[in-house]
Amino acid sequence: MISIHEHDLATAVTVPDSFLSSAYDLPKETHKKVFKALKNLVIDPRNVGLHLEQLNGRASDLWSIRVD
Image (cartoon, rainbow, N blue to C red; front, side, top):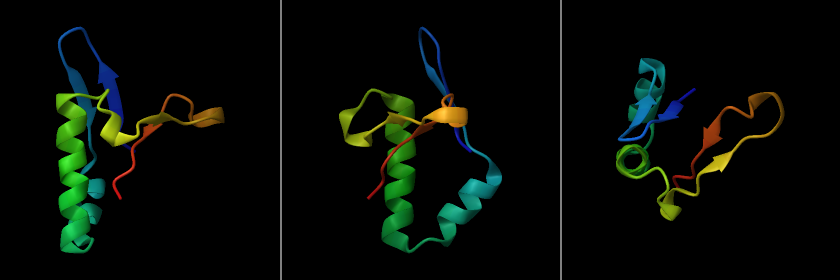
């Protein structure tokens, strides 16, 4: 799970080591896209290219982004 917390001046993104390890195991082009998306998320979480969407139901405090 990736946590996103917006503050007045910055966005804090928490990425577990297990996610990073899994991302590195993806095909090279895909893992490049994952890390580019994470970078863009930190820089500007409202970037429309991220396709940021809040999840529903019990996971409504979580968000998803599309990488590919």
